[in-house]
Image (cartoon, rainbow, N blue to C red; front, side):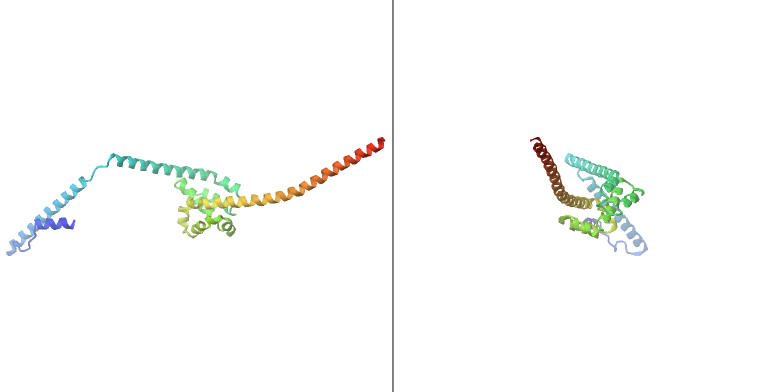
Length: 229
């Protein structure tokens, strides 16, 4: 633009000395200045318009690429909406099924969020996930129970500002579900160990009872045999 104006001024030099003799000369000079400025402005506008018109039309490849990008974006938005609706419909059952492992406030938090109004299901799901994540990882025992590779992400979530937690809750939701799975697996292993120990004792008792019954039957049989002689 600076080069363009410089060229224009070289073509139409503004000479303050032109017509400088007397009042009429000054008036003529002002008129000449205004005329030359208008001419420069018109030429600049014409050149800029020509440059805009010179922009190439999009090629067929550009059009197809734009259509594919728009389609992919729409599909991603639809998938996010579907996932959010599915989560919102199932979150109450999820909390009920895992009440022994989630935070104590989980059920109340879900009820509170469900009573609020949201612009769409995605924002509602984000609010639910954010509250459940905060409640779950407010307990150190849950952080300790998390797989080691998840702990840095858990701490990153806890360090976020409140608004950012809600915006990014979906990205951190797997830290809760995977930790929950780890806790349930640990509980199952402990229960299996107890069951094996109990089964061992029970088996010994059953064997003893069986042997007693067999011995009793054998004794009774031998007794009858002795009487028959």
